[in-house]
Length: 449
Image (tube, rainbow, N blue to C red; front, side):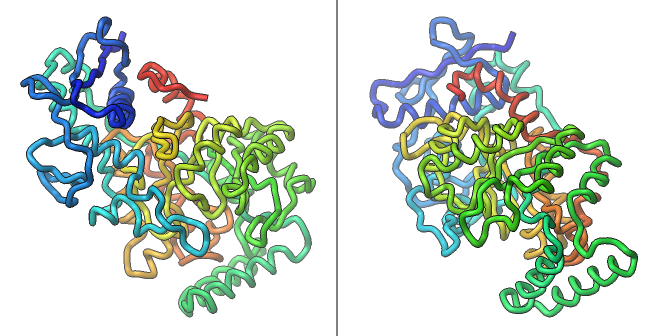
């Protein structure tokens, strides 16, 4: 049986700070497989705030000047009281993004992220490192927790995911998509090397009598060879020009999803482009997916388009178990500083959310963009997974099925997916990861849908 811990607050800690700190404490407990209970039944009781020698240090909860101290970034300023719990809260709530403006595509710009605000490397899981530091504080107060807190987990579990933004359902669809990829490379990105790369890759595939674009079948075969099952997110609504080219009720779409499900892959919802801004839209789209016979446990927003915390209430209404939309399309890293599925904090309600957030730490188009800036995508991808592995993490990676053939992004980034599959890490679906995490987070006292 896991040790039981409890948190109580000194009477001088303002009431409005209780929920955020209690949430951070439960995040720590769940991450260490500790159960949270009341003080009367706990094996170890922590007191937050106050002047007693055995109390946890409490900052004033007012943002100070961000600083680096003891090898860690401090959003609230370190001062003399190193309050790791308030820093964990800042990361898992993404406080710097609260009420942040959105870019022309309706996404919170990366410049508002915690990493950018603090001026630190986003490819370091900073919340996890604060949790590690809090372990040392906890052990100093309660040495009896040593058997649990000293049992460090290592190695990374990878969740392969694929967003179905395009499917060739009509004659000519592939040619139109290839022309679009070339137009984006030439006119939007103004990247002649990418134009040449796409043209060369498509020509080579056609000469070998293969489809000009890669696709679902190619990725399924790749994952079959490596004995991997993954998560495929499908759009069920066409309400904007940036939504998918296909209709969900098309026979080709339905047969594709059935083939994926038959091989044990998970089918999730790709929330349509405008769904996050239309109350109830995700619930309606999830109902459509489930009516077609798929579980629909998780969501990833198309274009990663959302305005932050308000998304959690829509996910709850849709009865989703998890979301995996909080990543970046132009960079890799740990947006919330976490390297495992976790329960985020909803700053609009000042309460924990009721769904898991699965960290999306890298995607193909971000690696392609980084390659254009001179970064080696293979080295960068390995570094991100190594950081996750340092914490025994479980993280999501996104490769669109249309990129594995090098006919959309920079040459070498699409096929990098197979190199990641061959690393020897553990690979499971997103739903399997959340199902495994769920009992631990329930024991930590989270109310989950």
